[in-house]
Image (cartoon, rainbow, N blue to C red; front, side, top):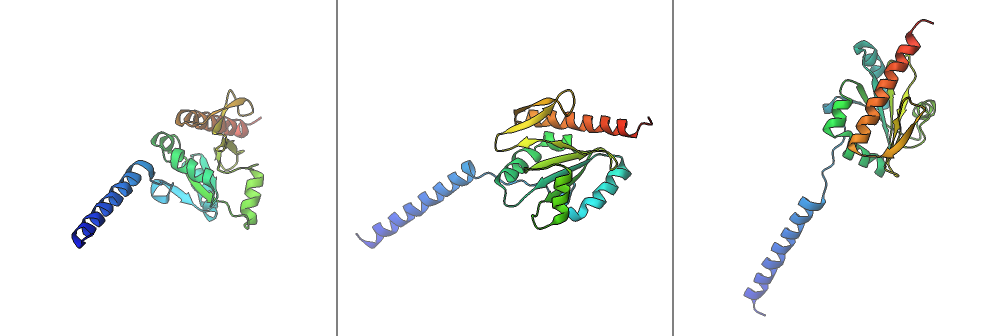
Length: 187
């Protein structure tokens, strides 16, 4: 084999490698979208007191998203659902806080226990600092979301989709608001 044939074959191999890489990049690599401060999220457990204060000042509910790293289900939920336009608009009025769970932090562990969170990812809605927190149940491993109908204690797990997550969020926000009204009304 002469030098010219060898160079030609190397150029062809290089071109095929580039085409294969581009194919993988465009058709198989999914861009990662995470919630961030630029999207209006407060990030970190240390922001909890500020988030509560902001929620009270603005008279908006507090939406807390609990995640862990590494956590495949948390990453999938955040990338595939929390960053969707319809879900973002559903939680837009809320004060949004993302807390990365650390097993060594006893304060975070106490918060998880108080909110009865045993699996991640998890979401909690508090309509006001003085009212009870309501969880939004998402079972990523089973691809299910709790749909509370007509109240939080009754309902069904339904297949997780953009639509069912939006309905679950809408219902849970409404239930949290009703609960806040009941808890603040004089008896």
